[in-house]
Amino acid sequence: MKKIIYILFIGLLLSGCNKQTDKTLVCNKNEKLNENDVFQKIESTYIDNKIAFANLDIKIVVSDRYVEYINVLEQQLLESYNEFRDKDGVTFSSIKGDSDIKVLIGVDFSKINAPIEALGLINDQSTYDDAYKTFTEMGYSCK
Image 1: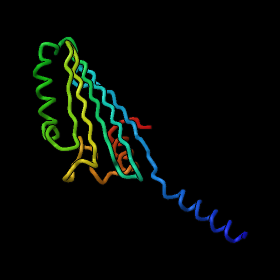
Image 2: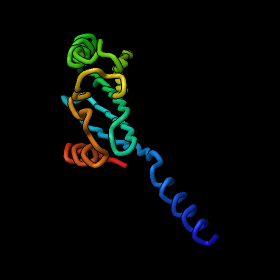
Image 3: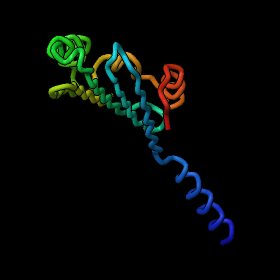
């Protein structure tokens, strides 16, 4: 009887080790670029240490000197992310205010048919540790 209980106990322990583990990495970077404030947030979710989802949130607060050029800036920013717009698994939106522009991009890696380097930073083979290293080397603070 003790052997059966012992085997069941070991079996339960081992089956518990096969559960999916989810980790989320959130990285932020704030910088000044040509007198404009640029705020970036990248949130990526990993299931069993393989990337599953990534979201990029970019907000540019335009200085008074450049407010009159906000439409041109918005067009340039949107063009730089054009390649992601019509891909399966990618959501894209932008919001323009009087003195700021916000771009939101989401990537669901399970719905992407071909390899993609999402947002120019994360590819479909990225692990949590890979992304953490890449982002911190680029000046992001990550947790």
